[in-house]
Structure formats: C-alpha cells, structure tokens
Amino acid sequence: RYVKIGKLVYATCYVLLSAEGTVTGNAQIQGLPFTAENTATLYSIAATQWSGLATNWVSVVARVEPNTTTANIMGLAAAGTANTTPLTATDIADTTFFVCTFQYRATA
Image (cartoon, rainbow, N blue to C red; front, side, top):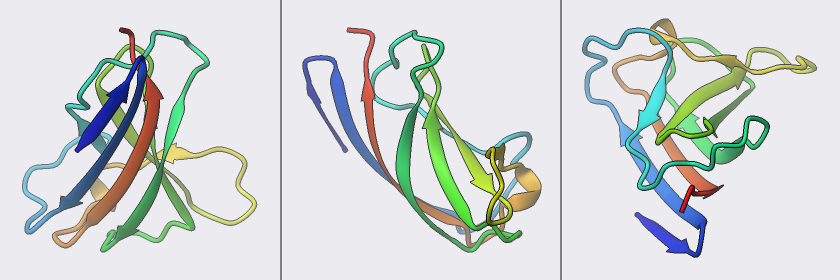
C-alpha cells in the first residue's frame, strides 16, 4: 500500500515466506511504487519489524536506494557496530517475515 503526496511517498509492505525457495545474493524488497530520487547521499531507511531469520541480528532496516524501486535489507550483527551490512540468502529462512514502513522522495 502507498500514498504519494507531491514527490513524497509513504509505502508499507508485509513480506511472509512460506518457503525460502531459491533466494540468491543480497536480500531486497523490489517493486516500490515509484523510483526514488537520484541523489547519491539521500538514502531513506524504512522502519522494519522482522522475525524468523536464519541468523541473529540486533537491528534490521530496509534502505531505499537512489534512482531505483528497490530497498536493500540491511542489518547490524552486534550492538555497537558502526555500519550496516546487507542480509544475504544465508540469512533468510523458510519462515522469515518483514513488515516495513517507507518514506522516501520520488523522482517525480
């Protein structure tokens, strides 16, 4: 679901896996309703609730990438860690779920 007011997009998603399937590479949410503004340092972070991951994380966020309709799933592996890292296929399990709320600027 989403609402767009001018260039500002508010979107939510609920992702629930019943089987991991053939997940490869970094975990992403694809198909956001509008392309994010193409500003290199303008990342939008989604508030995220998660459960059922195959590995432990202290924090998980979804980061909307500039000039895409994609949000990369990023996490902190330990408290006090300075930078997030992408979740990969090995972090995803059959029962993984994410609930995200995005706010980002669209290109138009």
